Amino acid sequence: MSDLQTALAEAGVAAVVDGDILAAHSVDHARLVAPGKAAALVRARSTEEVSAVLRVAGERGAPVVPQGARTGLAGSATAVDGAILLDVSPMDSILSLDPVDRIAVCQPGVRNAEISRAAAEHGLRYAPDPGSWETSTIGGNIATAAGGMCCVKYGVTAEYVLGLEVVMASGEVMRCGRRTAKGVAGYDLVRLFCGSEGTLGVITEATVKLSPIPADRLSLAAVFDTTAAAGRAVTAIMASGAQPSLLELIDGVHLRALEDMRPMGLPTDAAALLLVAADTDPAAELIAIERLCESSGASEVFRATDATEADALLESRRAAYHAMERLGTVLVDDVAVPRSRLAEALDGVAAAAERHGVVIGVIAHAGDGNLHPNIVVHPEDEASVAAGRAAFDEILEMTLAMGGTITGEHGVGMLKRDWLAREVDPVNLAVQRRVKEALDPLGILNPGKVLAG
Ligand SMILES: Cc1cc2nc3c(=O)[nH]c(=O)nc-3n(C[C@H](O)[C@H](O)[C@H](O)COP(=O)(O)OP(=O)(O)OC[C@H]3O[C@@H](n4cnc5c(N)ncnc54)[C@H](O)[C@@H]3O)c2cc1C
Image 1 (cartoon, rainbow, N blue to C red):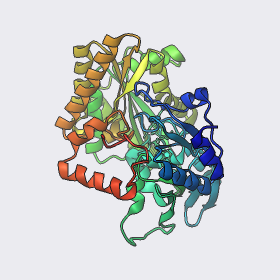
Image 2: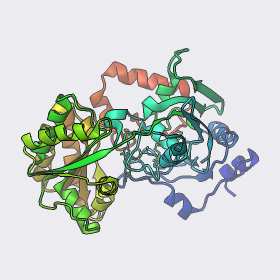
Image 3: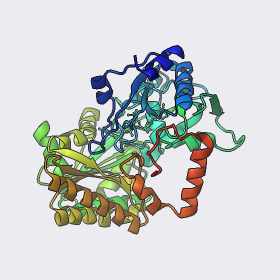
């Protein structure tokens, strides 16, 4: 038994130290972020165990890396040297669900889609729906402030979190927020933990807001010969006052990768496909949106004839990242630009791909101006990795010049920590450091993530 394992056992916590198991748990989906060498893995089953782990870590000055499902794309759940990997995914119960208060109280390891499945019998759902909804956890969603497909109309994770139980770096357990529809007592600590990437505390319970399942939903797919025309259509739709419940873009690189993976008749010679859904007065909304797509240059527009066809289209959007993984290792950018500049940003990504000689496909939560340029590299070829990283940086630089942000929803993690100082001003950065020092004076919580050393 290692010293650390003994100390954890004395605190009542079982830890795994097997090298192969640790290595398997040391990475998330940011494939180019090199992990450190973890010391132990704890699969926590209760708030008390999480608290015990943090007390032991504090005594020994050991770093703790909280982990959910490790579907993160920014290297924020990646191991650092000497870390205790604190996997909270076994805490996966929905503790209560109240259709009158319209809330669900969940342990952190509950998978996103499970909440909506449980709420469906009351005609309710948990709205934020990241592409990873079947696998990612609510704790990870809150810690990354995740976005998703329907967020263009219904908003992102932070808007749906009412209350939290958090184990602080000291091991103390804090409750913050509320279960009421309104409440403004004290500083908004719930919001502070949204997007904190495991660097300020470990979320052990979350009270989330549920909302009615929209009665009806219709979808269309519009085909474009240039990505810029698709970008213009998005701008026109948003400028028209329409409120699509989904507005996603899949570019030609992804369409071809998807069709290679699973033929379903996607238009592989198109430059981009826009997927649009509406759920208020869907028939009328889609007629207006169809016209806007056509006047922006769509070569074809297809209406999904029924819910099954609409779901198949959406499934292709959800599978797009995995289709790209078949082409090589994917370095995922996650920039958000003002919607009005989407077409320009898409052109900029294409120019970066050409300049650096790399394959970049783009999928986008287009209605939010949130682009995922997926850059394909081949790790065995150093030149390919260098070119991919150069394109990645160029896209970040372009985004900041447009008044955008380096991360729309995946977080900073290790992947973009050197870029944070380029987006926020020095006073902002100093305040962020002071918050971190106040809540985690020993610097044991997920060190090296978000804030550069
Ligand atoms: C195919 C695919 C599609 C995706 N689509 C989207 C998308 O549409 N929108 C989007 O926003 N993201 C998307 N992602 C990224 C990812 O799924 C999200 O970032 C998700 O929120 C991570 O959840 P997780 O449970 O996997 O967390 P992890 O990856 O395990 O952890 C992410 C971060 O949260 C911290 N953390 C995890 N649990 C806790 C906890 N209980 N307390 C404190 N900190 C914690 C970790 O330390 C880390 O910093 C996608 C990823 C994939 C692979």
